[in-house]
Length: 331
Image (cartoon, rainbow, N blue to C red; front, side, top):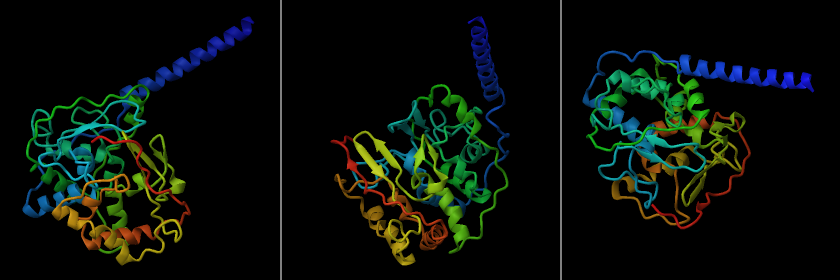
C-alpha cells in the first residue's frame, strides 16, 4: 500500500507540476504579439467607401458590433446603434462575452486608439492593452485581410459617430481564459488576389465573410474540417434556434444544382429590404444569415464567391430546415 501511495503521490505531483508549467507558459509567453504599426492610415473618400463596404457588407461587422432589431427579418441595424457594442448571449458560452464598442467615443469606444492598434486588433486579435481577444471575433479569418483593405476598414471606423456605451470586460473562466491566449498570431504584409470573378478572389472574400464558420458543424467552437461548408451548425439564443445550410456543390443536399445567376439572385432579392425596410419576423421567417449585409455586395463579388464554393468538396448532408422560435421569443 505504501508503494501505491507513493506512486499516486508522485503522479499527482507530476500533474500539478505540468499544470503549473503550462499555466506559467500561457501566462508569461502568450499571447504572441507584435507592436502596433506607427502612423495613421491614408484617408480618402474612396478608401472610406471601401472600408464601409467591408464593414457593412463583406465582413459584416454590424452582425456583432451593432445594435440590431431582431423583431424584423435579418435583424437590421437600429438607428444610432452602429458599432456601439453589446453583451452577447448564446447558449453554451462559458462566460460573459462583451462585444466592444468600436465607435469613436474616447471613453467607452476606440476613439483613443491609434490606427495601428485598431489594425492589430482586427487581424492579430490583440487588444490595446495587449490581451488576447476572444476568438468569436473572427481574426483567424481577418488575418487574411489585405493591408489595403484593413487600412480602408480603419479609415471607415474613424468616421463612426461616437456613441457612449460602457460595457463590461469579457470574462471567461479557467482554463478558457488561458487557452484563448494561444490563438492570436502577428500578421503583416498581406496582399489580396486581383479582384475579379475568380474562385481565387472568391476565397479571399469568403474568408473575410467567414462563411465557413457558420456553415460548418462545430464542437465547442472548433469546426469539423471534414465537413467544411456542409451546414448543420446549430445556433441557439433565448427563444430561437437556427441551423445553417449545406453550401457545398452537392446536387441533392447542397447548392450543386444552383446556377451562378440563381446564387447571385438569392442575395440581390434582399436589396429591397435594405432600401425599404425589413418585414416583421414570424416563427417560420426568422434567420441569422446576414442577408441585409451580403445583399449589398456587388454582383462580381457574389459571382467570385459562388465560383469558389463550386471548387469545394461535395458533401452529402441533408440539413433540417431551421427550427425557428423554440418558444415565445422576446427581443
